Length: 55
Image (cartoon, rainbow, N blue to C red; front, side, top):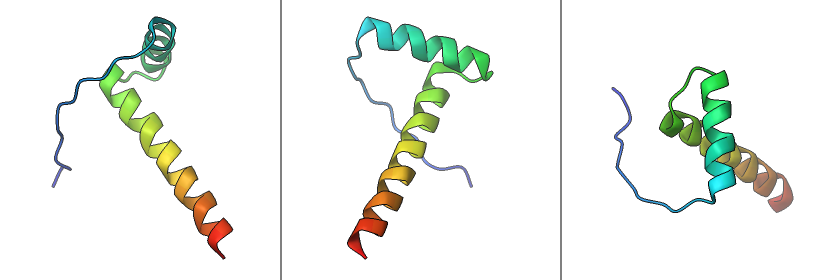
């Protein structure tokens, strides 16, 4: 079963939008898919780092 998705509205700097669009295109993903991927990777790294620091 696919994870549930929810629409959100955010405001981003113009230079960030441009770069994310370029990176998304390079990896054959939509803008939204790429942002999702970046955020998932960031959260995983953050949680991993936090887990290490909590030990």
